[in-house]
Amino acid sequence: MEFSGVDGFLGTRASIMLDVVFLAMFAVVPVMVASIALARYRNDFTWHKRIQLTLAIVLAVAVLAFEIDMRFFTNWAERAAPSPYFNSASKWTSPVGISLLVHLCFAIPTAFIWIYVVSGAIRHFPVPPTPNSYSARHKFWGRVAAIEMTMTAITGWVFYYLAFVA
Ligand code: HEM
Image 1 (tube, helix red, strand yellow):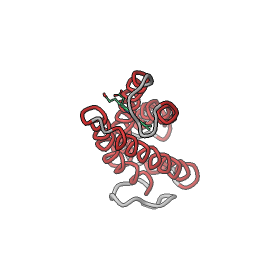
Image 2: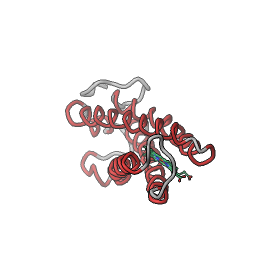
Image 3: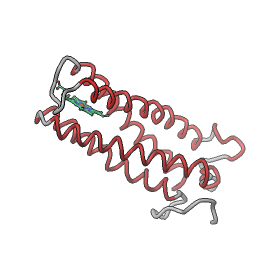
C-alpha cells in the first residue's frame, strides 16, 4: 500500500521514524536500568551521569525528529487504517486511538520530568557528582522518571502493534 512519508525498515506499516523510536526504546530502557544500578550498587556516579546525559540528548534528538516526521510527513491514521483495531470514523475511541491517548499520558509528562531531573541534578550535584543534600529529591524524582520512561516504552509498543502490525 502507498502511504505518505518514508516507509520504515521493519516490514510493518510504520514510517521510518516510528520504526527508529520503536526499536530505540528496547535499548533505552535496559541502558537506563544499568545506569541506575551503577549509581545504586557501584557508587559510580560519574558513569551514571554520563549515561543519563547521553540518553537524555539522544532521546531529545529522537523526539524532535519524530515530531517533525509526524507533523509534516507521516499520517499515522492513514497507516493505521487497515488495522482491525482502528476505525477512521471514530479515531479516538477505537482501540488504536485509546492506546495512543494512554501512550501520550505517559510520554508527555516523561519529557518534562526528565528535563527536571537532569537540570536539577546538574545544578545541585558537584563535579564530579557525589551524593549530597539533594540526593533524596533526586532519588525520588529519578525513580519517577525511570518508571515513566518504562511505561512510555511499553504503551508505545502496544500502540505500534495495534496500529501498524495488526
Ligand atoms: C533523567 C536522568 C536521571 C535519572 C532517571 C536518574 C535516576 C537516578 C536514580 C533512580 C538514582 C537512585 C539510585 C538508588 O536507588 O540508589 C540516582 C542516583 C544518583 N544520581 Fe541520577 N539520574 C539521572 C541523572 C543524573 C545526573 C545528570 C546526575 C549528575 C549530574 C546524577 C547523579 C546522581 C547521583 C550523585 C546519585 C546518587 C545519589 C545518592 O545515592 O545519594 N543523576 N539517579
